[in-house]
Image 1: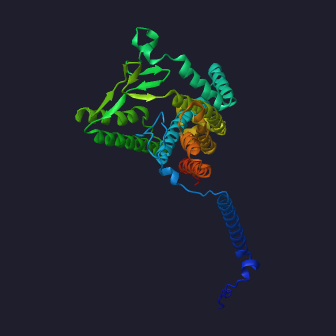
Image 2: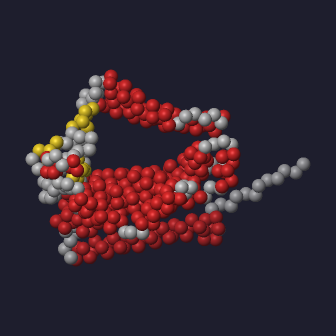
Image 3: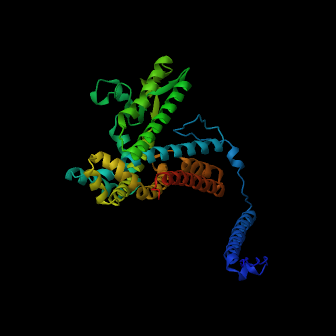
Length: 404
């Protein structure tokens, strides 16, 4: 009986980096990377040398000097004598606030409009088509200015709420719509509010677990559990019970007219509302087309088979169509989220102080540190864009169809 032996492996030699196709690819990649690093280093060295000739240098010490300007809307305490670093951080938080609110609202608008565009009701379908075509074909800056004009010119001033004019009454005796913004109640967190928040977070986790359990049970046995009312019960009832047991740890501070303006409560400025809704309805029009394309990508045979099994149209949409459409919808929606975040830099048009208005605007003009400010701006938008892409890609991998 003869035995087969493997030929001895050839020892590695430097010439194999070019002659052996197993290593040649990595050699070319390494050389290309090395050349790129050398080129970028040369550009950096050339920049520093030219700045030195002009008597300038790259320094971020200006971030520690007093800013000297006010910011009309801030999520954290801020005074004009705080350093530029804190002013920039306020601008960053304002940008993140608009981006988060805009992405959530645009998703709601887009999903509703995309689904309703395929409605069998002719009027509803045409109205959604008009919404999509109008809003996505007009520049977002114009929509920002239009909504801001409505907020400042069409709404009454705070002093109008002093009289008996029915058009100037507060909504539910708690919300005031004025040309200076919208005033809403402010929550006051008392003793036990932390425990209440923990119960609410646990309720959210419980609702998510229930929905996942119901989905797994449906796919495994075909048994269909109710989704809507159990989810609402898990979300609301434990929190209400904890609120009652803890003696009402959270109260509301209502806005009250004092002098010529409202005091207390939370003021949501018209500039924020204009930017928020303009970005939401503009981006929502694009998301609506992504959703419509995703739904149409699902074969009609599957919807007909689901209907033949006795599933109602709403169940067909939630259990058959949307899970398959997500693989088509999510990738372009990621791009729309990134566009919305970057379009928020138009906030300066209505006086909303985002990071472009603080770090890239007043701070840049006061300090003259254009290169440093622009580099920091680029770094911020790069980090936030990569973060959004990473989170959405994780979600995309979680919901995409799995091959057997």
